[in-house]
Image (cartoon, rainbow, N blue to C red; front, side, top):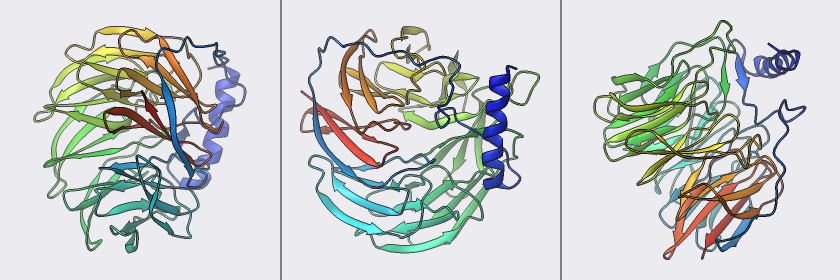
Length: 391
């Protein structure tokens, strides 16, 4: 292991052990931007072939060292900032529907089903807000939560840093069930998401495992391997499932750091295909392709049926890109300097570029529509929401 990597790991662990007391989390390289081993690719002018217009932007509060993701619910978005502001806005205009100041630091974005919304505090408490943005209940988890809650099927579900999945009754806050996994010696500090789909809840874990849990009681329906830890050192054996599992039809897809990307049968967990690919961000799928930004910030398009490579773009290498999102005829990613890059869905060529506030973009954009026009929403580390629409 190089001196640079050893130094990086020591700094990362020193920072997180103080905060987590007994659970060692390796900070995602997005957070540490000093002295990169590979310099980010310099941006060059883009021959613009896609007309992208800024739609609106607004501030919700800086994210600090955490990952914040907004929740899109029908015509609205619910977003939160690091200092405790939570607000609901109209997606098409940015107009405020309601705004609440919880007056407590938060550690992740928002989960919402449109009726109830939920956030988590630095103390590890889950706070539920009703349809008007008023706090409804607050319960402690007992430890840190780094990803947004998932809300649905009458539950608010969170994943803690000690690998517990906790489900609370949406109306009362009563704990309905707990699912526990064993801890790993060294894992990524990111924002692994939870997906609720019908009677199942999909969660990724360290060690490359993807599980499907029963909504009703949290029992295990099935477990599959997205990645198999390999290597002689704990660092080499980090193989966490990252991002949020994506469900489409009868498939659920997921990806792992130092592992693979793949899709699985939603009922049985049987692998449909897998591709050796390391990513710190997760996977996106649409009607034709699966998309992954790998650990070198190269954007990969794979066939939905087999995982075969369709195209691979290296134009943004080492710019610490977000996971991609499919928006109309484009694939959209953000980088560590707040630039938004629009790539052709067909061949990966750059077709447009947009700017935000200059702070890092760490989480995947959210796609929506304004009438028939495809649009996208980013939340920056500087605390701003930026909406863009394509013409």
